[in-house]
Amino acid sequence: MNSNNIVTLNHVSFKYEKEWVVKDVDLAITSGQFLGLVGPNGSGKSTLIKLMLGLLKPDQGEIKLFNQRMKTFNDWKEIGFVSQKANSFNSGFPASVLEVVQSGLVSRVGAFRFFNHQHKQKAQDALRLVEMEEYAHATIGELSGGQQQRIFIARALVSDPKLLILDEPTVGVDEKHVSDFYELLRKLNKEQGISLLMVTHDIGTITEHATHVVCMNKTIHFHGESKDYKEFSEEDLNHLYGHSVQALTHNHHHDEVNHL
Ligand SMILES: Nc1ncnc2c1ncn2[C@@H]1O[C@H](COP(=O)(O)OP(=O)(O)OP(=O)(O)O)[C@@H](O)[C@H]1O
Image 1 (cartoon, helix red, strand yellow):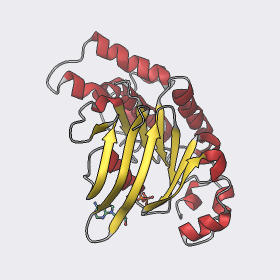
Image 2 (cartoon, rainbow, N blue to C red; image 1 turned 45 degrees about the vertical axis):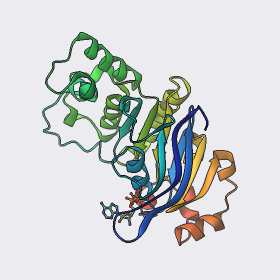
Image 3 (cartoon, rainbow, N blue to C red; image 1 turned 90 degrees about the horizontal axis):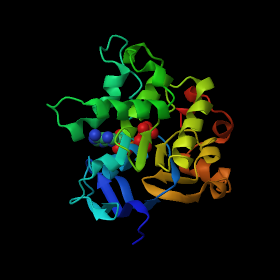
Image 4 (cartoon, rainbow, N blue to C red; image 1 turned 90 degrees about the vertical axis):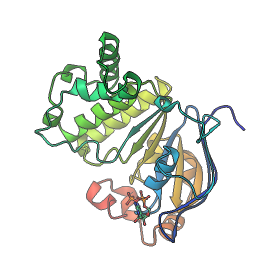
């Protein structure tokens, strides 16, 4: 047992129906890491995250959060989650940015109580962290995909989590804003000390940002420091993805990356 472990998976396997989707996964996320999770379409990345969040139950193996068994763990404010479709709000959706961010505190406040000044302050602090303070009173649907993404990160940060899990957060973010987005993640990781787990298809760029990389296709094929992932050969990747990924590692355009 490592006291720095935030998430620990021991021999975790899961199937929705007959086929294993996650098979015998051993993995630890330790405090301070920025872990990039990559793998082909349908390789079990989102399923693995749902298992970590307690939304699915493993068929085999065990998951611990902060060294506590999932069954007894109830400190969910320690884990923030931003889902895949968080940045596709309909432009008519009638909620202000501040309301969306405050809604991240509902589990603390209780569904039928009102937000007080302190909650509003926390929401404003979270907006400052993602550099969206001036949009507090804007309507969420008016913002661009990239701006909405930041708001949903603020919503996940409002309860001061130790781990932030992001499922494909750069999808829908304008390409010219992707580097600003990575800069935000760097700041959260290095300056705020928040550990990050990010699912991404950007196998070409993730090693520049993440401290560690996990590459999976049902089982884990690589888990280590980003610098060592670069040595995981193109041949290994082609084998794993079942086709040539050479072009993809040098081209970060989403349309092409999504073919993985
Ligand atoms: N609710 C479900 N019921 C049945 N099968 C499912 C369900 N959700 C996912 N699957 C299947 O499980 C496998 C893994 O899916 P998962 O979404 O975890 O992969 P992924 O790596 O996140 O994929 P992508 O990169 O395309 O988002 C796929 O074959 C998928 O079709």
